[in-house]
Image 1 (cartoon, rainbow over the protein chains, first blue to last red):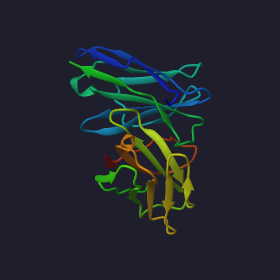
Image 2 (cartoon, rainbow over the protein chains, first blue to last red):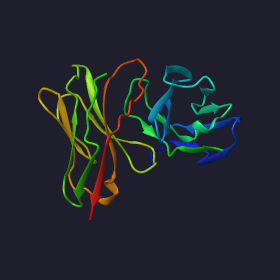
Image 3 (cartoon, chains in turn red, yellow):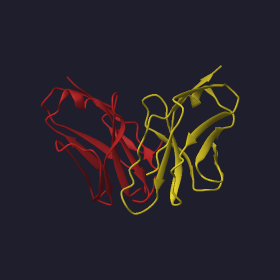
Length: 113
Length: 112
């Protein structure tokens, strides 16, 4: 158990819908990262937050957005969902914004039908 | 960031040492070598990292060659639960964004 929690574990929704994925980092970790893993793209970095502020952005679609709240939990919002958004979404956390020693949650499996 | 090359797959007998190689011939002086693994559809798991010296922790050992152009992750007594995809990642540690870039990795199959 990494100490990172993600909810929900599974999500099935229809095209065009909007969903919110939630992540709680390990106690004491200030940085949160979101990654997407699809069958054809592998594990891809989406976005990083550090202590409430956006720190880095990867190939995150404009339909996707994220935020980190004062209690350090984070949410990833996916809107206008397409079939290709079906994937595993992982959240990771680290103590600082400068660490590659990241601890991953169990993931949320999103299926868009 | 330095590019890494790993064999796509390897087999290892249970109880034997698993030696997973990684080539990073373009690594620069301030880049660290990180290893992660992902057991089927679970979140990736941090294993170990190093700069130039060999490192050991409760999970594995990391051997980095003197010229730093390659490294080997050693699982000393592989078990069936070590079956996973192992990723070697080279990154500069700093204040910029700290995303991990995962390549194809090595699929390690530990067999009874």
